[in-house]
Structure formats: C-alpha cells, structure tokens
Image (tube, rainbow, N blue to C red; front, top):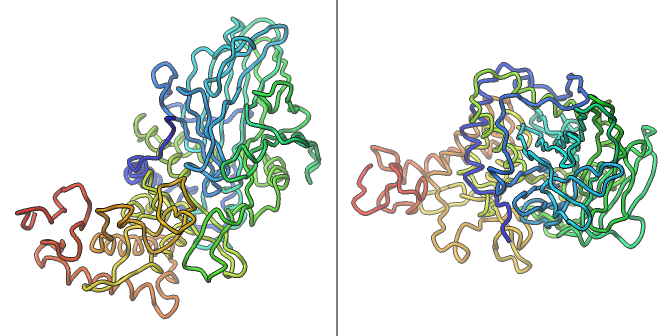
Length: 560
C-alpha cells in the first residue's frame, strides 16, 4: 500500500526555507523575544485567518499529494491521502500509525446524500458523493480543506486541521517555559468547521466527522463536564485501531457536537447545523490521541531499568479525559490555543517578501519537521527530564547530525530547549578513533526486540551508539570530519543566540573540551591546504556521499 513517507529531501528544505523566514523576521517579537512564556495576544476570529498568498492545492491536479498534519513532539498525526481516500493516524507518529476511512462532510436534511472529502470511501448505497472543487491550503500550523456541496445547494464547506505550535524563543530549559511547551505538545489537533450558505434559503442538516475504526465494546461515547464547566462528548475508538495500543478520540462541546454511532463505518461526532441565507457559521471540535505506554522510546544512555520512556504529554496529563478537558477549556480563553495558531499564521500574513512558492515550501517543511519530531519523558529513576530527537526521514535515524545542522537553525531560534536536549545526546555519544575524538553521524534508530537496528516502524526508536553501519547499511561510516565541524558550528550559534553557556561549561567544561578535541581530530585528518580529509584518511565519506566538490575519496580526486 502506498503511503506517506517523510523523505529526507523534505527535512533538508528547512535549511533554506525556515531559516530564510527567520532571518527575514528577526525583528518580529514572536521570533526574537527571549521570554519564558510565549502566550499569544492575538484575538481569534470565528474562522482562522490564513495568508492569502499561499498557493491552493486542488484534488484534480494533485490527488496523490499527501497532507501531513502532526503534533510537534507528541506523536499524534493525521495524514490525509486523498488519492487513496484514506487517513493514516496514530498516537505514535509516522511509521507507527494505521490507515482508515474518514467520513468528513455534510448530510443535508431531507436528502439521501452526503457530500464528503476524499478522506474516506464514498459508498453510493448510502448516498455518498465527493465534494466539488475540493482543494487544500497549507499554513504553518493549519491545513485548510475546502469544497462545495454536490447537491446544488451551493453550501461551501471548510475544515481546518490546526496545530497549536508557536514555540518558545530564548527558552533553553523546559522548566522556564513549561506552560508554553505544554501548549505546543498537547496531543490534539483542533478542527474548525465552517459552513457558508450563499443561497437565498436556510440550509440545515448534519456535519459528520467519523471513521470506520472499530469502537470498544462499551463506553465508546462518554459525556462529562470539564473543570471549566463545559459539558462535552468524547468518542474513543478501540485500542486495536492504534498500532501501539493507544487511544484515538474525537471530542466537542455537547451544545454543538453529539456522538454519532448509528452507522459503523462513520462513527464519530455530528453537528446539527442550520445556516441562514447568505450566512456562515464556524464550530470547533478536536481530534487527538492518548498513549501512556512506557515502552515507546528508549535511551540507552540512561541507567539499566530506567531506559524506557513515555511520550512527554503523559507527564503533563494523566488521562485522555484530562487532555480533552485542557484543550476545551483553553480553546479560546486562558492559554488560548486558537490564538497561538493564529499568531503562527500571522508570521506569513505579515510577510511581504516571500514568494508564493517559498511560502508553500516553508509550510510544507514545517509540517514535515513536526511529523518527525520526538519528545520523550524520562522516568523518575533516571532523574526525570526529557529527551528530544528527530527522525531522518525514511532512514529512520534519530538526530542525524548532518541533517540537524540544517533544521537546527530553526530549533535554535524557535525551540532552543528542544535543540539543547538533542545536541546533548550528541555530546554524550562522542567516540574516538585513531585520529581522536569525533561525533557520530546519527544518535540512534528503531531497534527490534533483539536490539538489532531496523527500519522505522518495525521497532522502538532508541537513542544508542549508532545504526549507520553494517549490517543494516553496508556502506555506513561515522563521518567524523563532517560531524565535528557541524557540532562546533551549531553549538557556537546556539550559545550566541541564547546566551546559554552552561551547555559548554557544565561538568568542568566537558562539552567545550569535546569540541576542542574534535577540532584537533580534524587537524590530524585533514589536508593542510583544504582542511578536507582525503585519500581515505579517517573514513572514505567525509562530507557526504554525493561525490560533490567536498567529496575527496574518489580515484584521482586530488584536492578538489
């Protein structure tokens, strides 16, 4: 089955695009203010505003394009594959999710028809048809899907899948910006449904958001009141619907959304709408995932018996209901999750320099980056804290330095606490060869039950010595010369931006001494004229494997 794969090219684009955006907006208070709290001040309209310069992707022209929606760090994802009429979703992220059909659209009153998006399989016997003029737009935090009803009513349907990521510029330690990190990583996507009636008479019916995922034998639909006093409906799918036995759920205010389980292949929530002539309405619900498993991530640097980690949200909330309560009560008040998303979209709205294509690439790269991010919480026996890592696309390596030196620019400016954790792992994994100290190409990968490195999705992501070597890859080499330079430059930039010298000075200047040792290594391995390792000194992969002008190990290469 064809499905989305986060190719390394997608992440590499962040080097040019996200970095360029940050440079252009270096005076923006959202990106440059070194504060411990990043609470938005933007008032949220009924419908989220997106940059009008963003290109629109149409179903007819790009049906095979996958639309990636994922929560930064929390591993909940919702990847729409319109060409397959399906969605890949799960609590454990890309490679660890399951495919299903999602029925998302409107069922007008008095008609035996349902106009749906290409997120699920239309069944003619049930009166299903696909929305007309189906298209979607990528914002920084939002994917906007639009279409027109196929019943000649003219009803225009908009569905926004909204992340709550905004970042914490200047915050090097989660303890200094914990509330904002919680807002960034809550494992839900907000769903904004807007219906616009351009006609001359009132239109009514049900908006459906459901799936053919299995329901549990009992208690699929629960009602309760949040601490803020809002009565809500929560529909949970059976744990078998999630690859790592978490729980996928849908929730909304009971005053608008009700559980809808009458048809098994579209069990979810429904909104009974009534839209007057030339009027529009917007309603918000949420989709999410909860997984408190202890064995979703492992860090071999930690003491034996304390190496397994939970997803970070499991340290912030104790149950699925608590996650839903938090998201509902903070939707447009208190932490104001919708305003966080709007503040993120305003970065593009307020930009008058980027081209249309650049805006799309930036948005697409950010969606891809978030889908590959990991944030695990350490057990108390390991001293607590957290571990951050990023997949290197389909290779499945964790925190690959030669990719980190590209997306790391974005992290240092927007989420420096995440970058600090990831690069700390690199320092801890430093090794030695005949030329001295070097930093590894990758800091881990998925490993199977026998501890053997394997492809992503076939094991547990694990921080460990390395997986970029035989037997998994016959050509694997640690690339010391390249990685030593990358780490020196990344660390220097991090310190210059954040002022956090403790990354270098802790433990009697341990990390600073490692960088010095790495530079000594490069002096010994490098050619005196170019500084590039050559003639198979050190390793035969020095800067990359593409045989460009910095690749100096081929026959008669000399000092290119």
